[in-house]
Each structure stands twice: as C-alpha cells, then as structure tokens.
Length: 294
Length: 264
Ligand SMILES: Nc1ncnc2c1ncn2[C@@H]1O[C@H](COP(=O)(O)OP(=O)(O)OP(=O)(O)O)[C@@H](O)[C@H]1O
Ligand SMILES: [Mg+2]
Image 1 (cartoon, rainbow over the protein chains, first blue to last red):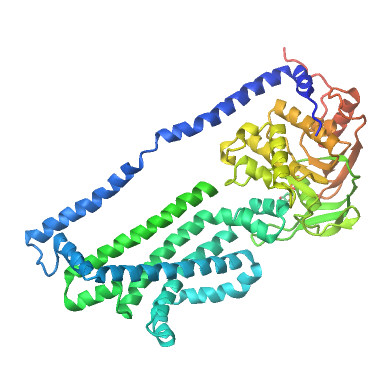
Image 2: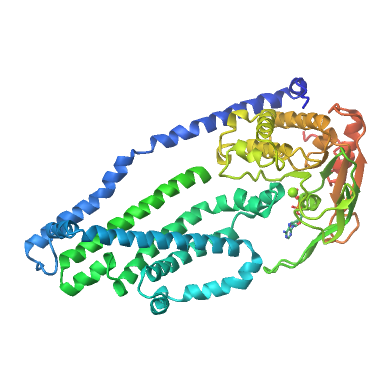
C-alpha cells in the first residue's frame, strides 16, 4: 500500500484551530483509558480476605452447635455434638465405608452431570439455532421437562434395574434440562447486530457459531452448568434414597432406620462440602471462561 | 455492480407497526473501482440500501448484480463497516480486525496485514484492548480496519467517519483514498457530510423522496451528481462549492444569501 505522508500537514494548515482542539481532546481520551485499570485495582482485596470473611459464619455455626448440644436443652438423640459426628466419620472411614460412599456418590454425580450437560448443550444449541428444529421439537422437549424428574424412577428401575445405569441416567435427566433451557434461550437472544457481523464476515454456519454465538452465550452457559450441578446432587440423593445399597444417600437412609443421628449429620455435612467443592470447580471454569470471553 | 429496480418494503409487524415502503425503484450502475457517495436525510433508507448491496437483506423486488451475476446471500467479495462499530466485546481490537481476513489467509500474511492496517488507522497502541476500553472513534476505526482486512472487491461503508474528530476524520479520508489508489475496490459510502462526499467520490447519489410524490411512497434516487476533477481534490475548489450548495438544497437546506439585518 502506498501511503502519502504529507496529507496530515496539508490538512493541518487549513484547519489549524480545529486541529489544536481535537489534538487536545485526543490526548485527553488516551489519558483517560490509560488511567482506568489502576483505579479498579486499588479496590481489589486479596483472595484470603474473602476466604476469611466467608469462614466466619460456618465457624460461628459450629460453636453455636457445640454450645447448644452440650447445654442439655436438646437431648443427645436429637442433636449430636460436633465431636460425636467427627468420631462417627473417623469410625466409618476406618472401616473403609465412608470413602467408598463418598467416591461412588461423586462418581455418579460427575458422570450424570457430564452426560446431561453435554447433551443439554447439544440439544439446546440445535433448538436455539434452527427455527425448524425449534418449531418441530421444542414443544415436545418442553413437555418432557414438565414431567417431575422423579416420576421417571419406577420406569427406570423397570427398564434398567437398580444398577448404576439407572441412577446415572436419572442424574443425567436432572442435569440435562437446566443446560438445555439456558442454552437454547440464550442462543435465541444473542445480539442481532453481532450475529450480522458474523454473517457478513463469517464463512459458514459453523463459523458464525464459533465466532459469535458460542462466545456470546458463555456467561449464560456457565450459570446453566451451575444449576445443572445442583440438580445432579439433588437427583443423586433422590436416587440413592430410593434404590441403592451404597452411597451418601444410602448412608442417610440407613442412619435414619438405625437411629444413628450422628451419621445423619455426617452425611448432610459431607453433601454440603462435596456440593460446594464441585461448585468451586465450576467457579474456576467460570473465571477462566469469563477472562477469555468477556 | 448494478442495482436494478430495487424495492424494499417492510411488512406489518406483530406489534402493530404499519407496513411501509422504504426503497422504491433504485436503479444504479456502478463501474469497478468507482467511489460512490450516498447522501440523503436521516431515515431515508441509506443503510437499508447498503444491506441489499452486500446481501444481508434481499430486495422485495428487483435485483443486485455483481460482475453480471445476481447476488445470492452474502457475497465474500464484499466487506462492510456498519453504521455502529459492532465489535465483538470478548475479542481484543486486533482479534476483531482479524475477523475481516478472507478465508484461508496464511497466518503470517494475515498477521502482517492486520498489523499494517492497525498502524494505518492509528490503533497499534490499543491493539490489545477490549472494545469497551476504547473510545467511540477508536472503535469506528477498528471497524474500518476490519472491513479493509478483507481486501474486498466491493467495500461498503456506512458513515465510516461519523464518530471521528475533525483531524482524524480528514486523515482517515486520505487513508481511504490511498488504499483505493493502491487496491482500487468499488467503494459505496454513506455520509452525512456533503464536503466529505465531494472530496472522496466520483459520483454523489442523493437519495430521498421524489419531489411531489405522496408521503410514505419510499425513497428513490433524486439526483446523481458527477464530481469533476481528479483526486486528490482541493477542498476549497469553487466548482465544488457550487455543487455543494446544489446538493445541500437537494437535502432541503436553505441557502443563506441574504445578509441578516443587524438589530441596532
Ligand atoms: N427491520 C426493519 N423493519 C422495519 N422498518 C425498518 C427496518 N429497518 C429499517 N426500517 C425503516 O427503514 C427506514 C430507513 O432506515 P435506514 O436505517 O436505512 O435509514 P438511514 O437512511 O440509514 O438513516 P440514518 O442516516 O439515520 O442512518 C426507516 O424509516 C426505518 O424505520
Ligand atoms: Mg443509516
């Protein structure tokens, strides 16, 4: 490309007054953008600060629980002490049972969550992108979504027996719908102007999807995944309460039958911890994706 | 490129907005390498006409032909800079400009082309910023670079310099002419600035309601003015000044010949 270099000088001679003013404005705007990041950085607190603040309430709860359970207001068969719950945990893990329960439950959740969110993403993408697919199958998928997922349990047991398959499939169903709903909805509402950019500069439908549509829905997909994960744990406990002989849900049921309230508390606390841990994994994924795509 | 009897009307929408005719019988022949400026009052259908030209929208009747073949869908030989910058917010400026590269461009060649364009539109220092971190004028220049990256046969620009300050605007006009001299693409450019149209184009097309037509009958070409003189032109040329006032009159701007009496 041949570029004339004296054009600016010509222009400057003709328009001296405007030049001066706009040059000043230009300086100003450059300075403004350069200043923006540091101002935000000063407001950021270190990570451990958030961690400490977040730990205040749980610690206070445990202290309160300890005081309440040792005060004698509530009998021990209704409220175990934190220590006895800890001991129940140590006892179960010494016999190798606890780790087994935790491992199998986590495996079921992760497997079902994975299968459910992948298929939710795929079906949601097809229905969100294609008007025909949407007209044809969206009402049917909507009807399946309207079935309370636990209603599938008897059918699943009848078809698949009480093996792993039926439990994982139930969790898959639970994880599928939140992802499907958020993805198909978000794709339909991607900024129309940006879609046109993709059409004008893209090469194919696939290209449009990769350049514009998928990046645009990343934040929504992540919140869909969050919901799906919570659903997965919900359906895990449901499945294990109803038909299983191992896992945290089974531990709950068994402890209820045996009146082992310390183990009941243990199972609930473990579910909270595991749920929070897996959710934190999604949080890591979210931070990575949002840094890249927003 | 030729436009033949292009009509575009929008149907009644479900929100009760009545049907309306926007473009009526727009017929225009544009020869390869020509620069055509499109002017007309706001809302007269300039952007709509550009959308027909690049195939983002298709005429209700009539047709658009490029190199003798009718346009079907979006043509890879065209590139557009929209009226709004429309940068993808999750990509840096440089990655936004890369979108404009034609398919199958070699990585190294593409990279050097993008770097050169960013230099030309004076954005090399901001190339790593996100669109929300740059000013409106910078975003508009990035959008221009994105369209130029395609190295298109037909370059369609919708008010490409609208958000720029006076100096940058003049620099960018010269940049456009330089690029056109090096790679003579057909350029169709919408502008609100009659001086800009006269400085840049071979022909100025005035779009608007035909005088005496019923309101709501859609805009057509009111007048086509051949701009005399080879580029680069003197912005203060007397002949251009006369055409300018003619065009301004066509846009409905009164000429102020009379001296307004000073109140004493
Ligand atoms: N999708 C649409 N549906 C209905 N009406 C539309 C649509 N797009 C444009 N119009 C109408 O077409 C007319 C012309 O719009 P257009 O954007 O082409 O104007 P313009 O000449 O580019 O104006 P400006 O100079 O302000 O950008 C307007 O009256 C607008 O309301
Ligand atoms: Mg417009």
